[in-house]
Length: 118
Image (cartoon, rainbow, N blue to C red):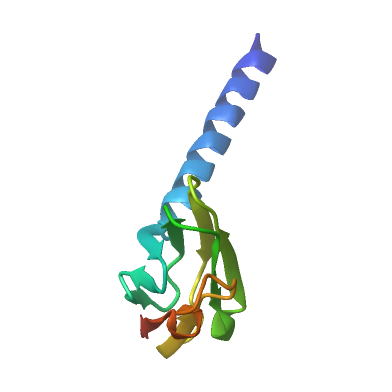
């Protein structure tokens, strides 16, 4: 009987500690991005340094890409699917992101801006 109580109390204490630790972590911010031939909407993404973010991409067109080389992150954006990209910006400034899968004659101009605030 004592052993059961001890195990129950230990389990409850561990659960409380995990809950407190989880709430101390920053929440992921979700940003939805729509890719259409030759544009991203929004084309400017404002993020915070050190704040985890999930970029959710959709497209109704053709397969496209997202590449933010300054953060070493990329994703394929496929029609009919939500593509998710998780990362935490580790530096402040203004950075360019581009489509890195050829999507037609306007592909070279398909880009956007990541503004990361300190």
